Length: 174
Image 1: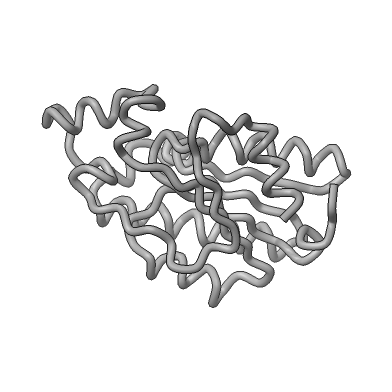
Image 2: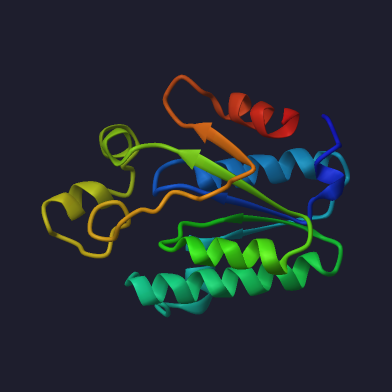
């Protein structure tokens, strides 16, 4: 595994729409890094919501509050010499701008997939199906506009032709 960018990285931020594979890739990447004796923590947006209960909600303001928690937690952990992998959806490009300004050795990965692809092929939670028939609100890409990252370090197009190993290879060999 190439070590060139990892030796200069403290926070790896993986983003993309719901169903793009953020949690799966974060978990697999953490396993790879741990096998190389790296100290790694994964911060997943959904898991952090479980830790804090129902707060925040899924509104735009709630999502921004959630991302700010992830940002500050990632910074605090990475400042102690641990690699942090964040798997998070966000509604606002200014939030990722904060990461670049405040987190040393920040690396951003965008798992690019369309709502159309995800709703047809990866809607395990049923979010898109429910949002498209107005059963639920506040779904990014449907009721909340998705704003693509402005300058990710790596863009990985997500489709059914790439396995988890293929995606890990793209990340680790970049």
